[in-house]
Image 1 (cartoon, rainbow, N blue to C red):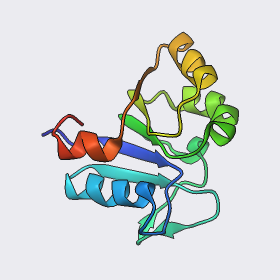
Image 2 (cartoon, helix red, strand yellow):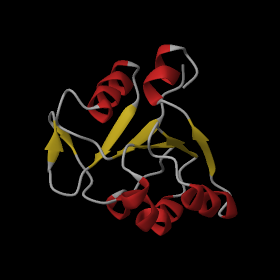
Image 3 (cartoon, rainbow, N blue to C red):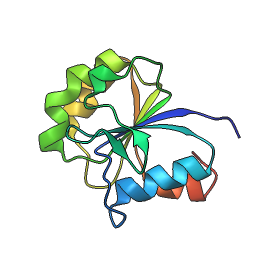
Image 4 (cartoon, rainbow, N blue to C red):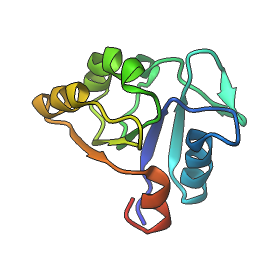
Length: 122
């Protein structure tokens, strides 16, 4: 298993949220996580980035947990981040964002981060 740097757009401090479950599962699998949350300094002691533009290191995977209403305005920030891939978790699919990512040469997929981790496909 290779370790990845994974940014979690829409990270939540609430344990019942899938983005929080993904944060925990990614860490359990040895990945370096960067929670992205505009109003929190940390989540479970892990420092957050308040925006995608605050991330200064390469990101292998950006996993998205915000609705298209919130992600589409962030398209340019996602493109500037240049992640190796973008995972659009269930409910985050956006044809407009997907088109912008494809035009920028950024690989994206409709998938569930938790399923990918639990089946060894991450």
